[in-house]
Image 1 (cartoon, rainbow, N blue to C red):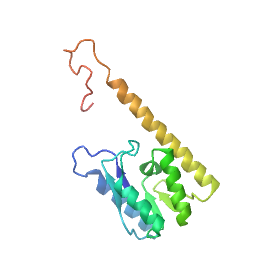
Image 2: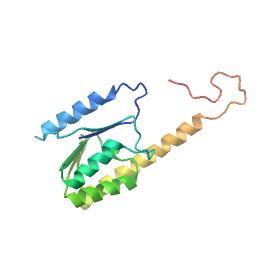
Image 3: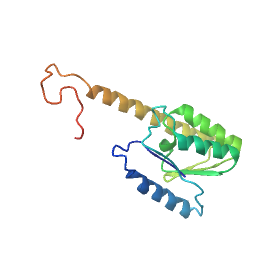
Image 4: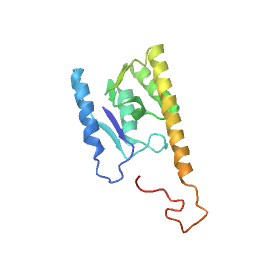
Amino acid sequence: MYARISQDREGDGAGRPSTTDRLQAGAERRGWTVAEEYVDDDISACSGKPRPAYRRMLADLRSGTRDAVIVWHLDRLHRRPIELEEFVQTCAAANVTDVVTLHGDFNLGSGDGLLVARLLSAVAANESDAKRRRDGARGWRSPNPDAPNAGVPRAFG
């Protein structure tokens, strides 16, 4: 089971239990036993920063230690199409076909399943890019440097 929590500003892992509990329940509904939880906490998938748990999961898939993946949504695994392609190659080489999300299953071994995964990866990459553009637009500088929040994003709201 893989979980990625993008932001954990407080460093308390508050989002982790709700995600992993739902994934555990999803695995149980399928009659699966969760052999390991791979969790990358406070790591964005679009930043390109290393995700140690994700890398360990890929290594375990390659070695045959793991034979399936359950994740909240496909964009929790990948926000960059190049990472999806590496994942697909890893699964194909390891003969792993059970990749499920709580929103649907993906048969990466079929043309249609791979197409849907690629489309969702492209949508996730676009959303990450749109978020960067929005965040950049918020950083404009006020002509009046003494104005409240002059060019500095608000912490909330």
